[in-house]
Structure formats: C-alpha cells, structure tokens
Length: 178
Image (cartoon, rainbow, N blue to C red; front, side, top):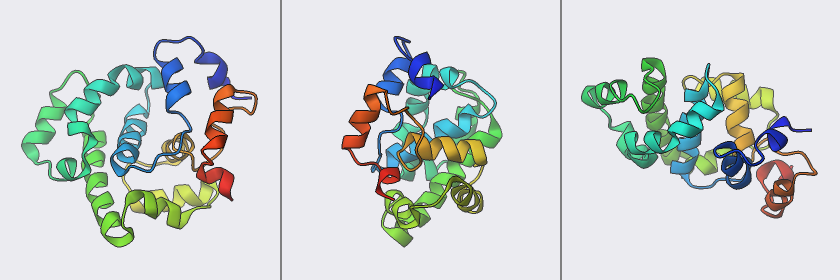
C-alpha cells in the first residue's frame, strides 16, 4: 500500500499534487523537464519543500521552457544561485541546464523527450536508471525512479484502492501498456 495516498489526504500541498499530478502520464516535453528538475532538486530534501517552491521554480526557470533553460549563460546561473525562493545548489542548477541541452539533442534524435521515453519503454527500474545515468546529470536511482513513477512510466504512485489510481488507469499510462 502506498503511504503517500494516505499521507497526502487533505494536505494543502501534497493533496493537490497526489490528486492531480502524481502518476499521471505526461506527454509535453516542458512538463517532463519540469518534473525532472523538481525531482533533481528534491535530492536530500523533503518533497514538501519542493512543492512549496514549485511556483518559484516555474518562474525562475522561465516556465521550464527547455530552449530558454538550455541557453542560460553565467548571468542566468548567478541569478538562480541568488534566488532565495528556489533551491540554490550549483550542482542542481548546472544539471538542469545540462539536461535541458541534452533534451534538445534527444528532440532532434527522437522528435521529442516524450518520444525518447516511449522508444525505451518498457524497461524495469534498474534498466531505466542505467539509461538515465548515461544520458542525464544528477539522475541516480531514487531521482530516476520517482521521475518515472510520477510521469506514468513505472508503477507504484498509487495503491489500487486509491480513487486516483482508477483515474490514472483510464488514461492508460505507459506502465500499464507493458
């Protein structure tokens, strides 16, 4: 049974995320990039911290527009490092910019980040982790697993008695298409 389904109930931040985002399949590249950046920034911190800063991240990273983030220069990095409304970790900021550039390459190769994910699906978590480690920065097992679970590529976001599970099942996420 998923602890998050019970823990998020009626919570002002976890509740809406659980009910409207977590585990729902994403196809939009900027939304996928946003989720990847948020998962990377969660490393070593609570997910609640990230949810509270989500709007600030969105503003600071230009709506997670991949092309804009990929073009960030030194002054943009400095702006992010000075922005107290987000996580000011140089390695995580550098990873976001590098990963935006990598996603641009994947878009050229596969048509989209979403299509690149589809092209590799289905993989088990261990295989996904290997692929992400060789493709992206700052993507260890937990970050990769949570990213893929939260975007519908791996199961486990909700237990089967959770009403949100049924909503997601109707959307036929990739993990259900094995």
